[in-house]
Length: 201
Image 1 (cartoon, one colour):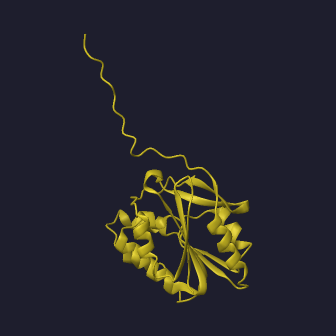
Image 2 (spheres, rainbow, N blue to C red):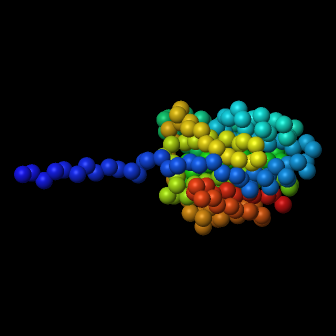
């Protein structure tokens, strides 16, 4: 009698459970923005109507430059990251807030450093940059939008139109690339989300 064949499954690309969480980073971020009566915020995407409405009620101007979509398009053309950065052509010091979400999870180390330097230049004194990134064992294979809800709660929405590679950056690497900022607060949650709040003192 032949020995039955046991199927082997590859779970390396299985989606983890992306559970909602309450963000301490966002609470501090919005407290800082509330002190600035003319705050302008830049969001690198993905475009999310809930986030647009959330910020529109709290800041003077809210700009969305969907770098996820631009990265996705340029990748199929043999892109260089500098062409993606060209879309961040705003004057220096013009924003009080910048939202990176998990954009850096789709970049290599050198490209992250270029992005952080550009964002540092775009932030006004006292401005803040919010960054999210996944721990390796929790990182989803697909790309998700971080959706802001009431009470600083964050949920996730799958972005089916995006097909981007994902890279893991250790806490040591994250600390190094964000050292452009003199003040960095970090938080980690049980669902594997890491948050960093960088202030341009």
